[in-house]
Length: 333
Image (cartoon, rainbow, N blue to C red; front, side):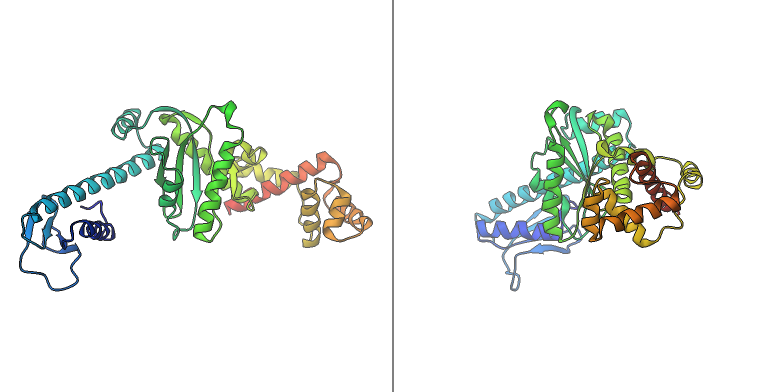
């Protein structure tokens, strides 16, 4: 009965009472009450059924009490076994994603839990508030237990391993799935939810690699695009390269190429808007509520201080990379 919480046990026997119109009590092997439907003193007549894990008492001794008791025992044992299997599959999936299982272990687990080994899948790494019952909500959102596998990694991280179509047929379906997750969990948690999408894979042996790529997408997204709630590893682009750069190389780039110590907050705000508006002077001036000539003056000043003219595509790229490398370094310290 360890797979059943007391709340679930109470709900189950309350349901059985509605069907049988008989009070039921469940005790553990030490005689402690786990759940009961009694609201008054225990009646004298009872039918007791012993099992290796618990004792079930039907508070009646008429001809139907034994039959109702047997049905109740069967129901609770079946429910407990199902929950226990679910608990086991959760551990299997977590170990699978962490890469601690051998190929033999993976094959054995796939057979035990009836999971198809070869199928095109992708990992969604979801970060939601601990107070949000994310795993249960996801199981309702993705009810196909054969194609949608869910594992809790820690208090705030849940993984959905989802079977997907062939690459040429996806057409943004992965992003749509992630959006559905973010919107549904966000409304339940009343807080921001983040979803990172890993690389697609074809065999369960490759699941750990997809999970690692989702972790990289999650961390790089927080570092370089913190406003985004959905980040795909495949769409990280240059952010992926910079995230995986060793710190000494990042420091070398900052020391030799990117010197921004003399820029104040107003100039940084100008640069941010300039990038947001794709280096368009007119649109940036409008967004900053300044005259076009004022913006040009600021860009000239930035060029004087850094040696980079952000109106030139090459210099703008260098500056953008520099900002990302600096963010990468700040993560280390």
